[in-house]
Image 1 (cartoon, protein in one colour):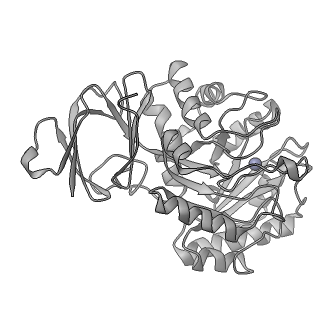
Image 2 (cartoon, rainbow, N blue to C red; image 1 turned 30 degrees about the vertical axis):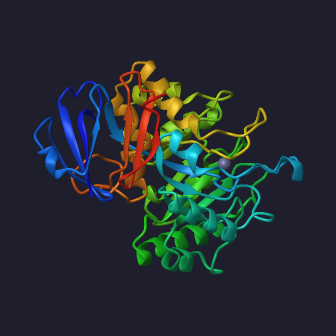
Image 3 (cartoon, rainbow, N blue to C red; image 1 turned 90 degrees about the horizontal axis):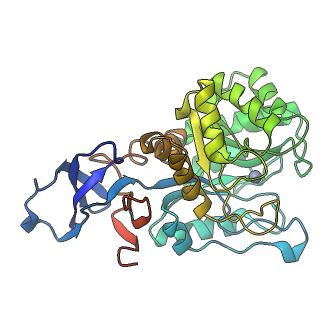
Length: 366
Ligand code: ZN
């Protein structure tokens, strides 16, 4: 089954070459100059004149079975549907539990991830919830990473937050070591994904864990670091020192993503170590549910603030794929990569989402 995206601009308007993208099954087979492929060999031709192609988004932090619950049972939030995910331009995500590792569990999370996979979306999981020791599938975080294919790390483990389990340094060292070893044995990224709260210790517990171990800095991915100014200043320094950081989309009380990315670039930080995720399905401090769409909207906000699309889209594609060790299968448009393609108009309105070669969202006629 060969599909041709005909006459499309690859990678952003500042790369004006018009291209044809040939998709074979779930993979990009070839990318060549527009008009260079014999259309009689193609099963389906999708005319894309005037459209732009980007790698589909990778969202590293999604509460796929819903989060919330922190104002009692009535505040538990609902699951996220595949339609909402696809309409937000996301083809790959990492699902996770949040503060509630009691009434919500990993088995439910796994089942939901499999359901989204059946709908065409690529899904991974973090074991754990806010608490240390973490909830696990197997009773052991190392075994989770080795034996459960979807598990790529632990998260979101809460630090510097009144809802955290206030883990000791030794508990953090034990957890991080298990994630690292499990990642090695299982051939996974082995990510320790850390929810950072507004607590007074800031990044302190993370930095202590790194300083008191020989663990690689790149395995730690603190998130929500743009939630307040003092935490974000620490995060800039952490990134300058070689650490990865993850910004949360839709932030309004702290530093909105477009402003945060601008500050990081101005600081001289290596932006390839910065990712943005949605926190979709979680509760937002002002009430309500964080939407999937916030991620894409913040990327477009970065472009409107003057940043080049070639800088902006990798924040939720190539950079995320490298963090999760999915690159170059995902996070780029190249022969041999998964056919995860976000197609937009010149106004960056999402027109199509192709995931693993399947057209999952089509708004061309809207
Ligand atoms: Zn969180």
